[in-house]
Image (cartoon, rainbow, N blue to C red):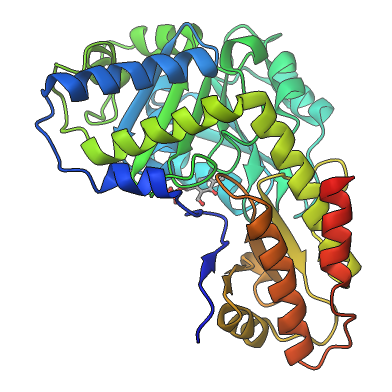
Length: 381
Ligand SMILES: Cc1ncc(COP(=O)(O)O)c(C=O)c1O
């Protein structure tokens, strides 16, 4: 009998049964009174839980569209933008901004390392930037940026807004928008919210909303904050058809998060990530991200000498666990393992046990149960 497949890539993440059920409901009219009430309640919860008096947008699209929406509403032709990059997704802002005729400066780290707050501050002291972009967790490297410290520092620069890409961090890491001084936080539904792909979610604080209002118009239409604000405040109004079932699914995800408690969820992710990373290290793997700056949502795991990436991931999939390959220079040298969203200790134990079986089948000398033992001691400790 084949093993059940656990999809443990860094997004989409496993979708809980109750969330799947919301996606399977019969679709109603978008002006249906109950749906309108659900949508309104969802936006209110998202604003309250992520602590902003600004606006929250829930729009059909992906994380990349959310990145574009953030840039489009906070910059105008010729503005300076500082992109702080810890990998492939940080770099994604570069082309996006250059296409808009923005003047882009980039500070990037060697993959696995973190850019210092001092380096960013130095750059901001040299010229005026309309926007700084930072990827909270870059999925290509598993590096977590010190967003709270960066946000505090950026606030010294009156005309500079901070955009935080939370696609691989939101709902697993603390990102309280107004309290922390984030101007725009953006994410997608498919990662730590544990919903299927298809929703872009953005929070915009008052400074970002003011910035958009300072432009008469922007070239983009679908992703214009001004088009969506009336809908987010009253979903009876229309701009683009809301993805009704995904909105219900996100509402169920938020209900689960409230039940768990957002702070408890952050602590769970931290505990699980530490345990997973220690278990992987006990089996001879290395974690790419430098200590102290490791993501809790995923691990970027470098193979020990002599393991073939394609063969390992094929056997691991046969053992029931699907992981993603490395990107850029780490393709073939690393795999990426998601451990975020609505997963529990069954998932974690199964993953480490399947990795041990895959190593064993590849002929690697492995003490069976070692990784599982480390994992469980850490989870219980
Ligand atoms: C950190 C980060 N930013 C942006 C994106 C792009 O999101 P999407 O694939 O939903 O467009 C991803 C996707 O994995 C990501 O991990």
